[in-house]
Length: 188
Image (cartoon, rainbow, N blue to C red; front, top):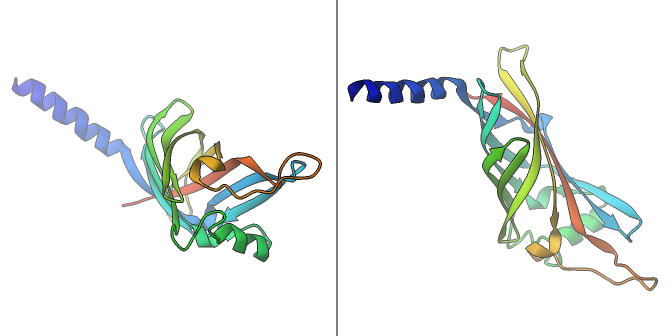
């Protein structure tokens, strides 16, 4: 019986040795999106303020968990008037819902399954996830790169504003494509 306990403790300790917590380096990361405009082109934007962390198993190269927080008021589409409208109650309602959050619950292969909360609504989401690299930087820090891509329907989160076009279609598409590029620094 003691050998079984010793074996379990050894397995858990070995797992802890190879797992690491990585803090997102926001100056080398990007949280972006794009959505159809007038059904003929796309508007791209990003959020300039965000943070996050993830657990990475260095032995297997598998992401164990990931959490992120985005500040809605930091939205930037290179158009102040549009950004103001996106922050308003018509869309994100930044005054009442200042943050978006994302939490990965599991990773299977190249899919990350988690919860995205936007405008007070939490929904299950699936993103493609790719480890884009692993390196020791010039200062001796371990870094890991990740990319997540997916899409959500903005109406599912209460971002309902739109206008119909005379020729058919609408001003803003319902599908929002999300692209997140993260560079994480191992925490000591």
